[in-house]
Amino acid sequence: MRKIMFPKAEKSDVKKRLREKGNIVTTRVSRELGKYKAGERLEYGGFFLKVVRLERFGDLKDHPFFDELNEEMKNTIKRYGEFDVIWLEVCE
Image (spheres, rainbow, N blue to C red):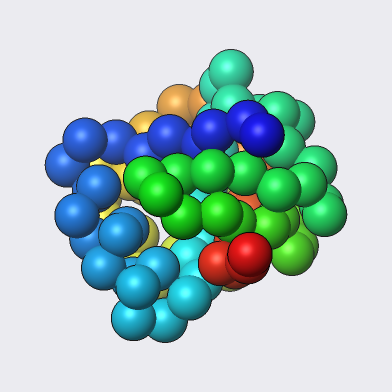
């Protein structure tokens, strides 16, 4: 099973969300673009995750959670142009 990684600064928040909500949405750019597929199972920090939805976008303003992104996130995504938004759920 492949692993998915998150920035070090986000690790505790990601694990907390997975424990409490059982799901998370992540944005992938650059070498991570196109790396994951819908239905794929992944591992992260002791959690088994399933890619339940994946969409590719070419304009930052189309990001489904645009208003929740901080300026650093927006600048990073903007730099790469295309990006994937991935919905993950905890599975067994």
